[in-house]
Length: 336
Image 1 (spheres, one colour):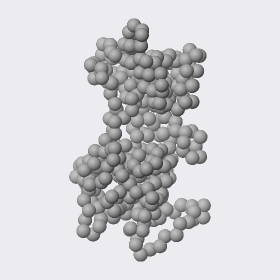
Image 2: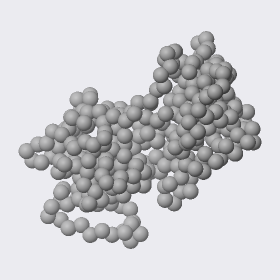
Image 3: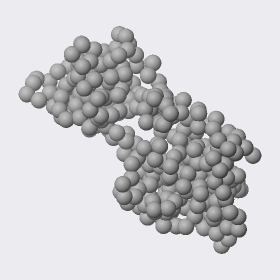
């Protein structure tokens, strides 16, 4: 059995930052994640995608942010159980929790901080009869290595930030043909991104088809052609090496939904007036996995939530000790 001060479920960016904040208070963390490596969705879905809203970084690649967070946490020597999903949680008579993973490995801690992001997730797939024939053979639901798509004929479907971001990115690459297909003429993406996409179309670097959707895929062994139905126009056949239907992810809490925690719209309800604790004392939820009035699903908000959760965790673990907050500019960083 693995024992620690704080058991963190989820090794994404917020989980990793929890290690740092706990370390400043001389608390040790062990992290559990179903993914085989730390970094959560930043590594699994878009490691090469730039992020623009991290304080102090005008732009930072998702993978680079994870590397920096790992380096920041390293002095505090966190433990990791990766590639193994947390399945059950049981509260013991001594107040500690035992979390058992899918493989049967047990972890014990007085405090559990859930930083599970969106939980387990699946891409929202379009309803096309022969879709499964071309999955990973021209049809991809996420971009892990952008270089694999450069120089190809790409069709991207969707009207949100992810669809617009990747359409713009690939349109700016040499010898890459991009067509953006959206079922409406109203986009959910940031206004600046929409304006930039139409500007690229005017420059001949991108084709945008609105009131349109992909209806059929063709090819032998891999994708070669896509059928697109556009409003008031005959069906068009587009040559395509890749189709990216970026309609978002369908999040699921997975086993956490059965832990007796209060759930609202697939997220864990927490008290945001103090420390982001759930309805079970000693179990906190931080980052995208939680919900409360005014919740914003931003990484920087998760960092704030983790910081306050750790403050209360310290008091629970050390009820007889008084912690005095000192700025890192004064006390520095002292690892274990």
